[in-house]
Length: 186
Picture (cartoon, rainbow, N blue to C red):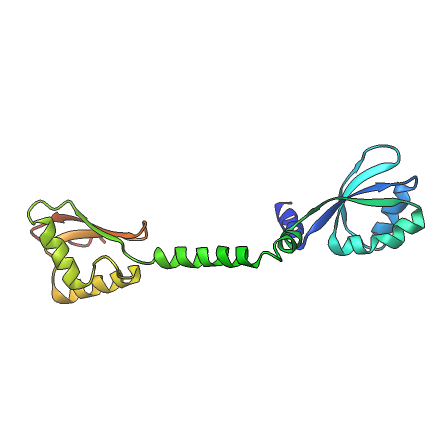
């Protein structure tokens, strides 16, 4: 049911008010011509409110003429109508697109490097060592993956460290001093 609602919203639909004495005949002809109607509510003896797709609405005029009913649009809903409303506002659409692109681009950089959990070594020494390995403010987050490879190649594993990535624009190093290499529990 939710998928059907979403599909109708994507394609666009119209809420209409049908006035006339032959409402049942109107509905029967619509069904016969395979026009999809939904949420049909009878308001009075001669009035009903219903929803119909954009293509179905275009096919209703001859049916209304045949049954002697009047059709009024109450509300237009859906993506086509929303896009039509913003059609002339090209600067707004450009600004929204530029915002999304800038947000993605700026969130791809490391803005700060934090070191916590170190008791034996100084924080500045660890930050300097990370900078020599390429982890410093201003680089792409995706460059942090190269840091793990370089750390393994150079044998720098004096601290058991965990890197938190993907949380904001920073690279946080949590470390605890260790004396021996951990064994794999598997």
